[in-house]
Image (cartoon, rainbow, N blue to C red):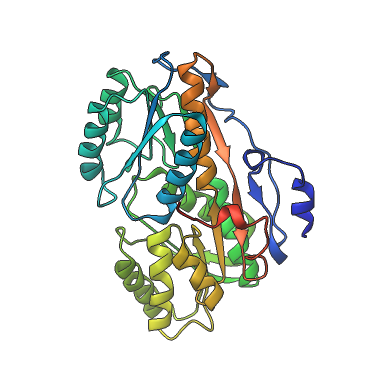
Length: 339
């Protein structure tokens, strides 16, 4: 057991935030409510909660399936009716009709991962006006006025953890690039910010190239990496900030015959990323605890229905996963599974 795990012995899953695992020597941080938000909030619906709906970001996503697993398990435990729906693509235009259909079912609470931090405000406002308490999981809105709670990882910290991990892997010097999705999704935007800011403030011998955008496509991500390598054959590292880029980055590096000299840190421990880590196609994963987000979301929904207050902002855990610690029992909650 590594020292950080010893520090966390006896803690509950929701008390764990950033876990320093493996030989990378990263740091445990404290959890709690955001200091920039009110400590607690109550919901608009005070009826006993009999139904909770979760609207994910996109179908067939291991990450959202893991949130669904946690929410479904907790709802069954608490005797609450539960439904899950998600659009076919990660896009607000696709998510809005899914949300409208859920609103028509009149659940007392809706857990939702908004696909755009501004475009989803009005559709979610309609859900609030219809009487549902709103809890975001994973992604957030720029305007949180309609929300009873926001449950998510500290994605700025996740980006910084990615920077520390990659810097360690490349020996603290050389060129690196972040591979993201087009601006507008809170999680990716914050991870890029955390990564770039940490690199610039802590690693003066590392040059951060312009962020590349992959448009939710592994194929596009691969092409972007190949282009960066063509222009920068001395590239030392890639930080892939989500599952799409995490799938695409190794392909681009392999296509350029650069795997031996380019280190890859991916975000999200879905099955394809875990397989790539075990197979040596990526070097580390920064992972969240989506199961815990689902559990907390349902717990908060039920509490709101009882008229209780819940944390306005709740931060769940992060872990850095390597081949050395991937089979450690303490890492298991951070490897995404459906149920």
